[in-house]
Length: 153
Image (cartoon, rainbow, N blue to C red; front, side, top):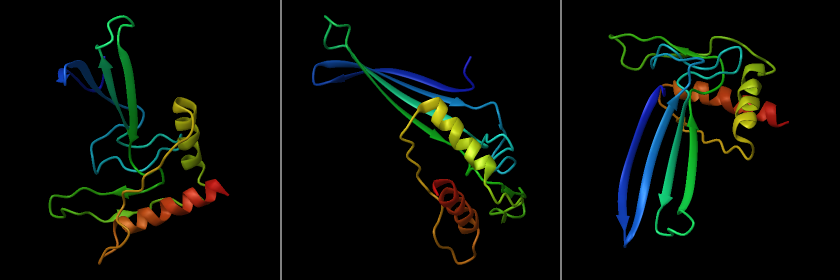
């Protein structure tokens, strides 16, 4: 049973037959809907954690059974303590840094878990806005950068 999605398609590419499989697995550890679960738990589990895997099977070499390749991407909430209260009246609710964690223990636990599950290297993309007229995402982005700087020293 997968809490997520599974799609499989057969493709033809210049005479080669390719099987494309896409799998998305949602974590059960800090699950919740958007705006109701944000940030990281005390144990280092992030909200809205989803593992995406793309598997390509090239059947063109029938002697060896074909060639497989896989690409894995993990996404989730920023692993610091923050919240965002949902409201119909407020389409972009304010982001609150709701706890001070001077040693970023939960953030460290998150990355230790990622390294244990997937190995290194871990490539992190920060998709948070870097500047805004009214700071919202910038606040949690700055806290995240402080956490990464602290962990890497």
